[in-house]
Each structure stands twice: as structure tokens, then as C-alpha cells.
Length: 179
Image 1 (cartoon, rainbow, N blue to C red):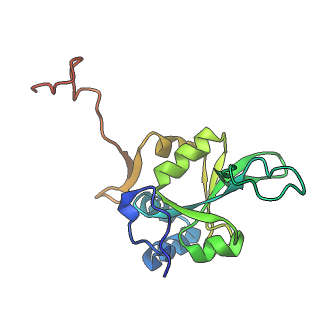
Image 2 (image 1 turned 90 degrees about the horizontal axis):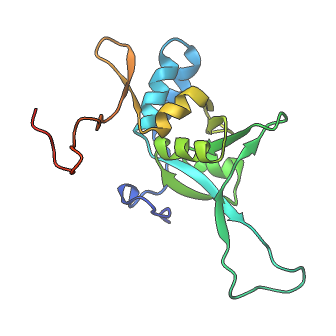
């Protein structure tokens, strides 16, 4: 069985199979209430697959292969009729290949995807576009995720953004403060 490209060592040995528990949480997001927040929280700790494809100059027609040319790889974007773009991402290779069989899956985390959305000026992240349980993450949540914040469920059943606060952790000379 083939393994996925490994830009992140945390995903070594990953074959792209979907996590059934994650897919179940995504299915429950349709039930409303706090289930959408639970789905986002679950996605914050999941391995996702960002599709990339070869992009750029294809060379002169009829010139044949250029041995010196290296294909640039780019994240795939989806454009709506209004011109807005979104970043598609997938929970498994089954969903990715159902949508775009020629795309290469790159393992990543939701904060990586959010950063890509910000970089490409995309207004949404689309999870598992062809199913089985598609989900849309919009700009306000994307902004928090791109800052490295993670949505977590709190003991009281609510949700909050978890992040590492480094504002007081170092002095100007790089050494920790005594508190």
C-alpha cells in the first residue's frame, strides 16, 4: 500500500484512510446545536488531506517533454459563481479521489489549511466536498485557526479557543521571566 507524501513527520506511515470517529462527528454536525462546534474541535486534532496539482507553464505545444522543467505544485481552490474562493480539504483519500482523482494528497492540520485560506484570500474551507458529510468553515473561524488557536470543548459543555500565550513568557533577551 502506498503512503502519502510526508511534509509533516507526524503523519509518517499514513495511508490516507478516513477516521471513522471523525466522520461520525461530521455527520452529527447536521443535527445542529453544539454539534458544529464539536466537528470543528475534532477537525482541530485530525489529519486532513490538502489536494495539490501541478500548476504553471506546460511548455510549448508540440515541443515534447522538457527534462529541465520541474512542475510547480499548488493547492487547489474552488471558485463560486460570485468569484469567492474556498480551500477544499478532505478527511480521507476516498473523498479526495471522488472529487478530483488527479490531485495529490498532502497530509496537514486544520491550522495549516486555515493559513492556506488566508494566504489565498479564500473565504471558506470546504471539508469533504463530495461527502460523505461535507462541512463549511467560514472566515471568522478560519481567522482564529490561522492564528494557531484550537477550538476545544470545555468541562461545562461550552467551547473556547485554546492557544499558547507567549506574551509574558520571555524577556527581551530571550530568557524566561520568573513569576
